[in-house]
Image (cartoon, rainbow, N blue to C red):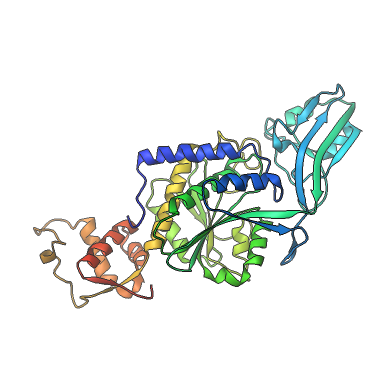
Length: 438
């Protein structure tokens, strides 16, 4: 199957264990859109792939945005009237509202309650909340715990800093034979959320590791960035070079057990949209194709009208549509090794198709060439035509320099891998030549 080998079941089991293990290693870190938690995460990724770390100073203007102050948190808690910690950042980093300003105060329960966030509909779960661009502070806790709080005086502490510093992101560039690029992007800014953050990080890291050292047609650029502001910052810093991006994927929410969802690029019919649709159609899990919308993840930055890059978003569960989204229930039990491995396999298949999707010219275009004397046809007549022979005939007929192998696969209904194998065999027998401009 092209330059990449397909995963067998043994490979999937082994890959799943590694992917889930890496997510587990990253899970305890308190990440945000800036700060040391993000740097620690990038350092662990850098142990697996070549990763350049870029630091952009606070106050840098990036289009209509400004790089914010850097946030770091050491500890946060609420102590009850008895002096014991009842909400403790050390037990769960979701307890503190991400980007909370420092506070050390004593207050009554009625004064504290406006700073508390819960989920009444799922009363055992802790929500994830942020206050990136408006200075505030707060705590998240289960609704059941909130109901147990009694009147009295509470001690509140958020031991954090909001200071001039840097926004940090990681970039892995794999040089191919062409300067045309495939962009793979994922956000690295959430704390202990396994599907919405770590699944994309893990799959992207291992995809880059899988491709490293390979004979690549395209160059590949992997971005590990804080959501929204990270993509905006990268685009602002790389505005002159984004025309090299021919295809792109945002990876997120890709480790749970639901079927695949793919959100198309803004133009809706880019090659990457067709490639992903073909790959998902020929794998053994349910999938759904979604039209572009101007909300979601960083595809909305890459697809903003000034750039309009061919970038889609590959997910299993769609953001905001599953109960565990942005809650403590998005944990290491919610993502599973096998779905992670199958997601990696789908990404590998997408890359394989991109790498091998060329146009060919039939070198014997006047009527069918005689395949039998080249041992490329069945030896006896009257039988049904096999898929392999059907693929050879389709490739010969549509290889006019205008149709790509993906065009042929879509029109014939055959898997791209079968069409690609047919093209390789026909080329070896002198019946096809690669169209130089493909």
